[in-house]
Image: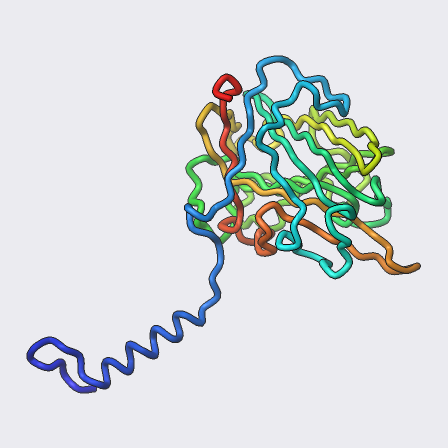
Length: 274
């Protein structure tokens, strides 16, 4: 390689090497999102007790998470028939003890669950939640305070599970309920009401389900933000003996299952500020 010339300009050899480096860098896969690009959701503080009955009349529904776009498909998108086939508006509320999930779901074949299938292949909502507000939003690997929560949506049973298979530092908190046919969330309340186009789901998930002796209990507060994402799954049968599982993710990024930097954020707000 030639030396730099006296006036500081690089030689041809250095220029070529730099150009090659830039080309290779440009070819590297881009994962995650910048803080400016990251999707942001709001959860509104609960001031009066919420009755879990499938009626969202007492909810603040001003800032829904909308899942209805082709760009949000992360699985079996060829079998998605559009928003009338599967879509949702999801609302989030909170108090110091619980996360509340309300959803207005449009689905042509609601309440599809089969006991013999893996729990995450049934009709369900999957929540991706960090309980550490100080976690690096650009992290590429799951930490001990990262959780995937599965809420089966069926009018006969409401199995739940917590998936920790992506976490290397478990801190004594293992996966629960992934084999199906169980409700592992303590204090979990849920109700679903059919509608003309699908169903309304209402649920309460205590924060205490995401802590143990080594993982501290998360207590939200106004202005606090955490990593968060949401996926809705709809099992379908285009022909006998064949199952397909279209999924829509709020952020539309299929890497979120293994890569928390693909998540959005959830900020806790005071209802009084609305």
